[in-house]
Amino acid sequence: GRKIIVAVEFSDQLTELLRPLKEMDFTAQSEIHFVHVFRTITNSFGLGEVPLVYPIMSDRGVIEQSGLVLLASVSDRNLQKNFDGKVVHKVLFSDYPKGKFCEYVNEVKADLVIIPTKEKHGIFESSFAQYVNKHTTCNMILLKYKL
Image 1 (cartoon, rainbow, N blue to C red):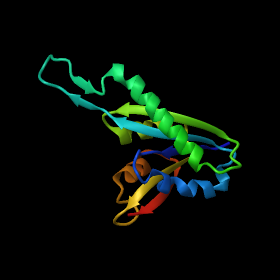
Image 2: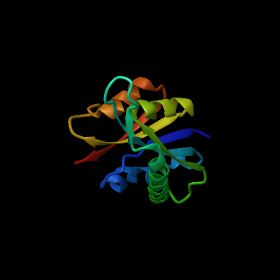
Image 3: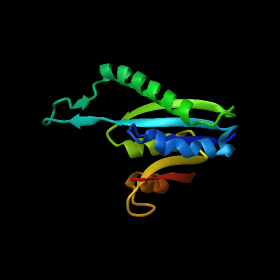
Image 4: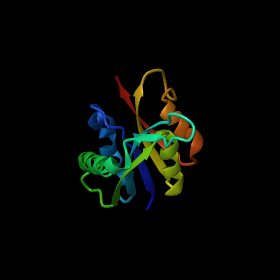
């Protein structure tokens, strides 16, 4: 079956944004990965000092668990009733989320990426979508949410 990656940004409009997934019958037999990348922040203070990275490693397990719970509820609500493929929930951490996301897409050799995007000025204004388009080879579907 095909591998589909859904980019998930935790926001108030999330359920709205992903609603079209329910209509995509072609996903029924697929392996669908719901992926969220938490932005980490690295503060370096000076030469020779160990940089501080937030969230710190010891907190990441908790953050990852809560992220996985959110992703599970997202997939439960947005996959169609007859879905009988495989669902993967993935929480990643990076200073550079879009780069990390593309790495993951390329690593798992995805066939399709689905990106919810807020429609402001036409199709590729979303720098995330633009970046993914440039740095992966798979097909993309943009779910455009009218603000």
